[in-house]
Image 1: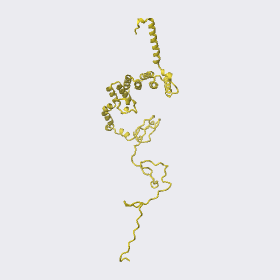
Image 2: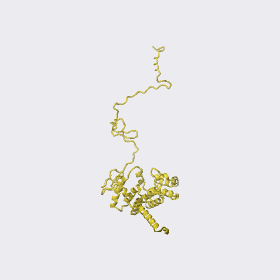
Image 3: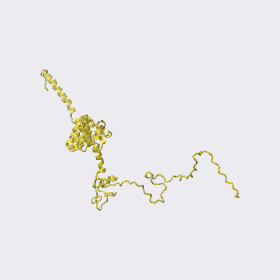
Image 4: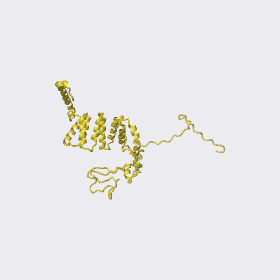
Length: 333
C-alpha cells in the first residue's frame, strides 16, 4: 500500500490504526473452534457434539469422528470450523470420500458451486461407487453452466437406478433442467443393464435360482460353524436347504426359507371327526380359533323352494281354485 506523503505522519498513523482495527475484527471471524462457545448441553444435537469432542480427546486421529463432528457443526452454521474438520478427516483417511462429499454439500448450501464441484470430484475419485456424489457433481456443473460435464456425471449416477432424480429422495432434483435429456440419452444403457439378469448364461444356474425362488441360502452370523462341523452341502453334512444347522459359538450360521407353496392346504388327518366348517377360508387363510365351528343357535332351518310363477302373474293375486275332479263318463259306473 502506497501512503500519500502529503498526509504527513498523522495520515500514516490513521491508516495504521485502520489496518489494526481490520485485523482485530478479522481475527475472531477466522478463529478456531468458535462453535464451542455456543454449545448447550440441553440441546440433543449439542450433546452429541460434546460427546464427539470427548471421544476425540481419546482418539484424536480418528477420521470418522472428525467427519461426524464437522457434520454437526455445519448444521449450526459454523461452516469455517466444519471445513476445517472435514479437511482433517480427509487427510487422516485418504481412502474415505465421505468428508469431501460432505464438504461439497456445505459449499452447495452456501451457493459456492465451484468449490462444490471440486469437492465432489475429489469424492468420486476416492469412491467411484458414491452415486450421490456423482449426481451432486452433475448438479454443481449444471449450476456452473457446464451442461456437457453435468450430463456425463448424471449418467454415471444412473448406473444403479433413477431414484436420485426423485424429489422425495433428493430435494435438489426439483431444480435440475437436464433430467429429461439425461434419462433419454441413458435409456439404451439402462435397458441393457436391466436385461442382464434374464439374459446372462451362467454356468451355475443354481446361484441365481437360490434367491429367485425365495430362499435365503446363507446368512452371515458371527461365530461360524461349530468346530469340526461339516460345511453345508459337503459330504456327510446337511444339505443347504436343511433347517437344522449346527450353530457356532455366535449362533446359527445357515438359515433357509422354503419357497412359498401355491397348492391348497392338506385336509385334516381325521376327516370323519373334522368340523363341518372348513379350517381355511376361500382366500387360503386360517380361521381364528376363537370362532366356534357352529353357531350356538344351531343350524339354520331348511327352506322348501317356492313355486315359480309365470312372468305375467302378480305376487299379490289370489290363488287360482283347485280344478274339480272329472265326471264319470258313459260306461263308467
